[in-house]
Structures are given as structure tokens and as C-alpha cells.
Length: 151
Image (tube, rainbow, N blue to C red):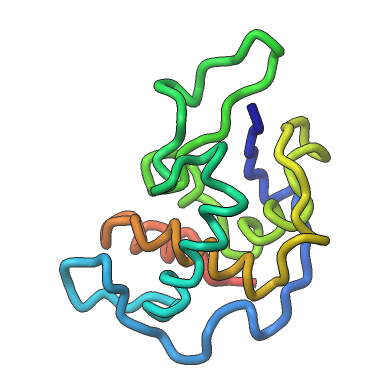
């Protein structure tokens, strides 16, 4: 079982100015006119990236694949958390989420493999757009208030 630990203090990545879109877009998943950093097309393309690379551990709809992602496994590791806004991913800035996908969780004690040689930066951001598309407006706003788009 692969584990994803998102610890921004341990994940330092220089993403540059193009980490998010210059123009905010309306998310198709929300029930309001909530503006998101990604376009509906990014989330749609991210679905394929996510399903091919992330779903085996995080679930097809980023819901997780175990009942309790906080319960330690027999090997001493933790299962991959849900990324749909019900776990801790929303606590972490876009930069840290991207860094975790790029570098994997092994450097911080997890088992998630690194995708730096498999996914482009654009594909990683599309995968993030896909799972953030499941976040409620309330969760997305809390993420923004925590500095989600700050470098």
C-alpha cells in the first residue's frame, strides 16, 4: 500500500510563476460560481492522469481505498489518504502537493513513488485539479485562506 504524507516543511520545490493559471476559472463540480485556479478542461484531463497513476492507492474519485486512512498498517506505514477534501490534502499549498507527486513520499517516510520522471509538471497540476474538483466550496475556501496558491 502506498502512503502519501504531505508535509510542506519537508517539501521545497521551486514551481515558478506558472504554477497556477493567470486567469481563474469556474469549477464544474461546485454548486456556486466559485472560482478555481484550474479550468474545467484541466480537471477533465487530470481525471485520466489520476486514474492511470494515482487511483490504485487513492481511489478512482480520490476517495481513498481503505476504511480508515489514519490506521497504521501491519508494516508500520499508513495507507494513502483520500484526496477528495475529506483528509488532510487541503491543508497543503499547491506547491507542496505538486512536490509530493514529483518526489514521492519515500523521503518523508512514506511509500508513495516519485513521479518526476513519469509525469510532466502540467500533468501533475492536472491531477491536482482533478482531485480538487471534488472539494466543496467551503473546503476550497479554507485551502485558499491557508495559503493554497501562495508560492
